[in-house]
Image (tube, rainbow, N blue to C red):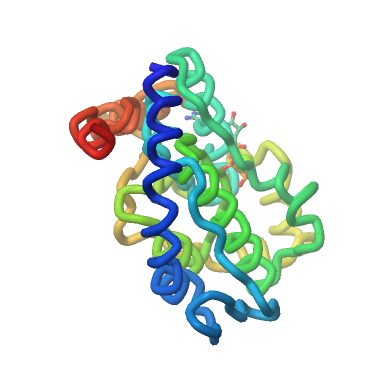
Amino acid sequence: MLATAARRISQQCGRTLAPMAAASGALQQQVAGVTSGPAGAVYNVGKATNIKFHDGMVPRDTKEEILGQKGVVLWFTGLSGSGKSTVACTLEHALAQRGRMTVLLDGDNVRHGLNKNLGFTAQDREENIRRIGEVSKLFAESGVITLTSFISPYRKDRESVRARMADGDFLECYMRIPIELCEQRDPKGLYKAARAGKIKNFTGIDDPYEEPDKAEIVVDARDAAGNMQSAEDMAATIMQYLEERGYLSAPAASGTEAATA
Ligand SMILES: Nc1ncnc2c1ncn2[C@@H]1O[C@H](COP(=O)(O)OP(=O)(O)OP(=O)(O)O)[C@@H](O)[C@H]1O
Ligand SMILES: [Mg+2]
């Protein structure tokens, strides 16, 4: 498999540079909302000037072929204590056991580094999600199964992330766990502190959680028979979703081989 992929890399690098360079102006206009650019080559993007998009990197499907899977973002959303981190972590281990390449971006962890300059105002929450969305997109487009675990309470922020990705690259996974159960679990004591007024802007208490209206996957506390589901049960349901839709296999050989034959 690696030899095939290496052959395809050298073939595609040689063949695709010229057309991609020609198309890059149009592509940039679509993806970045750029404001200007002489002769379709150099652009202003936000506060940055003289930006040129560099094309010709190893194509995504080559990377997916190397990894034997398809890149995707599995976006866990739900109240604090709904089990986003627990289920994402359980699923990530299950995927690793099956030899799948993953990355897990988790709320608190990312706030230690990349997003340590952000708080919990609506504006900071929006920027938090925007950055995670962009990082997730980079991973998914490199063929990695990307799991994110953030409350991400605002529908418009989640939809902005979805809108930046190709169809099928963004799977919203809604942890639809009642607030009473989340509050009962309260492993970090956050609900208690929020009820006591010691934490402000706490989702579900004095800040809203906007439920997804088109989540690809909805996880409930109980199964169809009314039994409480373990984190392993929930992870297994999501694994089945990924499997049935082909995310755990390389891109179809017909499409990739025909392009390089
Ligand atoms: N399916 C489950 N059944 C029983 N308990 C669970 C389940 N999923 C998670 N838990 C428990 O719920 C608690 C909260 O889970 P977790 O930390 O994963 O929530 P979270 O959604 O990531 O919260 P936060 O947004 O605060 O990070 C943990 O103590 C965890 O063990
Ligand atoms: Mg968490």
